[in-house]
Amino acid sequence: MSMAASAGEVIARLDAIGFDVGTYHISLYRTLLIVVTLVAIFAFGRLAESFAGRIFGRMHRLDPAQQLLGQKLFTISAWIILALAGIEFLGVSLTALTVFSGAFGLAIGFGLQKTFGNLISGIILLMDRSIKPGDVIAVGTGADKMVGQVSKIGIRAVSVVTRDKIEFLIPNETLMTSTVENWSYSSHDVRVKVPVPVAYGSDLVLAEKLLLEAAMELPRVLKRSEPQVWLNSFGDNAILFEVQMWIEDPEDGMGNLRSDLLKSIWQKFQVSGVEIPFPQTDIRIKEWPSQPAADSPES
Image 1 (cartoon, rainbow, N blue to C red):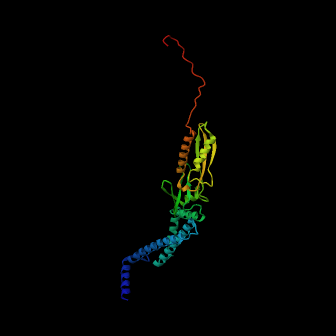
Image 2: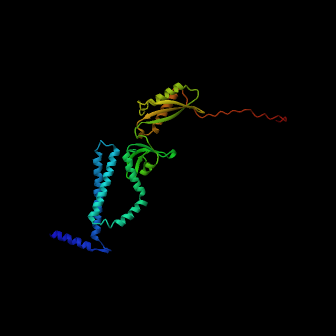
Image 3: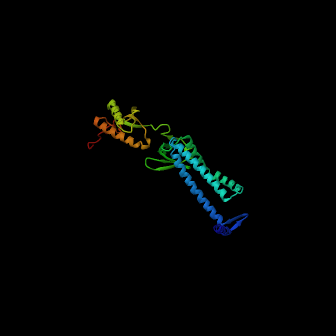
């Protein structure tokens, strides 16, 4: 009884230190109670996130996108429940929050609409599984085109890591409203095209054979989908071939694959005598200018 009485006395003294605002009493005790409640909500919320990550991570029958979606829905629900429990514990009247909730709704409508738009877009991306962690995607066009592997789908943005180990954070809403190339949406197989010029006068049958050999020798090229060599056109300075190869690991990059192919082609052409042309320009002179007349002996 003495401990309870002393605790009650401490609470009464702390509650006496404060001031009144209308019908509400703001005291040191209430401030400390609010701080402790917020810390508890944050701690339990982080525990809920960790718990959800472990639970859904063990559900191997679900794909990564479904695991991430379940984890995020569980986490959001836990935060909402903890917030409502905190309000109830503090004894805050929900009726008193009516005016504040209206102002907060306007703030959401004007200031946080992008944030909530990205949140909903992220949930939709996870639900329809159009973009999943591990997918290789391309965003943008032309020189601004960015290719990378999806590392994480967050509440606000999707993390995409390029071959240069540069991590781009793309807003979820951007991926919902713009055109995105997903190279591994239904299959990881990707066709790589490499143009190769051959000089006029070369043995085309031999050149095609060497191009196929160079492509088949690359370990990343799929054997179940054999590479092909097409003669595309007769250019101004060369006969233009195109090597087409299929790979199943686009996340490992394609520039290095093109480099390995071209180096192998160069070595094979050097040994076999097939030439890779360089730009040439032929000048045709229709008539030479007339020679100047010899008007004087000195000339």
